[in-house]
Amino acid sequence: MGFTDYKTLFDKIMAIDPKIRFATIFDMKGNVLHSEHRKGMKKPTFFR
Image (cartoon, rainbow, N blue to C red; front, side, top):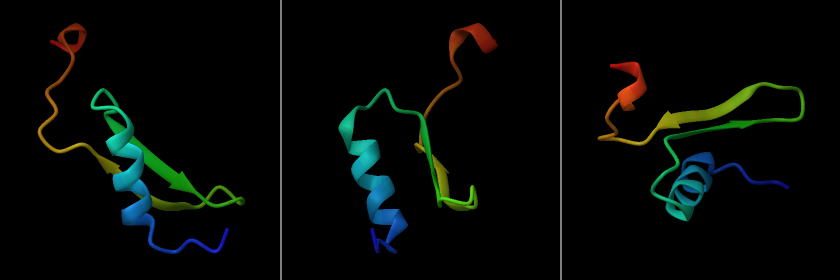
């Protein structure tokens, strides 16, 4: 793929749907390249 701007990819993923809470981008070996939670999200009610 040759994509190295993982923050931009993360932003595009998060823009797909406001219900997406977090995204993690891995390489083919399973190494985490970028992981982040949506800012301002509250815990779901089933965790309270």
